[in-house]
Length: 311
Image (cartoon, rainbow, N blue to C red):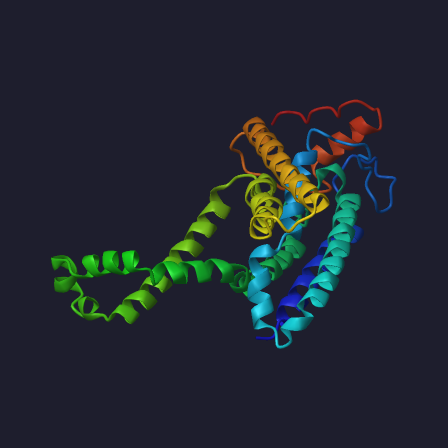
């Protein structure tokens, strides 16, 4: 399958987000005299740094898809070269887009930057991102699909599925299902498990109120385990007695870093979510709204605007 539509949709969404920020006055802590870029916070914020670190790990980490991509390549021996180049390019793109987004939208930059893009621009960006998710989700889901396939072929699963299909209710209501072979039962079970996994992922994405903290939690906990803790541990176990003390020390330091990120990131995100409550993240006010005029009036040192007369 060609990935050209995915690339076009992704690049178009990024360009629209940047173009909107350049074309329209951003809602941030500026006084209206700045032409393009907003006034931003340049100092270190150590209280939220673990949240950022979790998001960065989530964005860069790609271990679950490594083997799937390598196995599907026409020239697998070139995988390391392609991987190094793609990771370098991805890092540059993330840094550039993150910096531009913060410069354009200031301290009001949302964890989902599409909330900063409003009107028809915002609708178009959201449609493009939906297309990107639809085209890229099968690749991201591939490792989980392989695991679910192994689960659907396990004897315990087949026995449980056979017991369900052999019940009186199934034989009465769905007589064709009771006559399925083992291969058919495994195939239908695999399809059902994949559907449940996709439904579960969508439900979590819809119900979790803070997208930024959600991906930071995933990066801090799940991806820290599979990136910094499990690989060095497996390497030291498989090469036991053959590693130098420097290699062992390096692997131990990586594991310690992963554990630190996991513990601090988990605590920080839980504390932040509790402080924010269960309210969903909202889009900032429109550039010409009363809330923005009030904020700019206060920023210029002119105090609060008088309240409008009551009707």
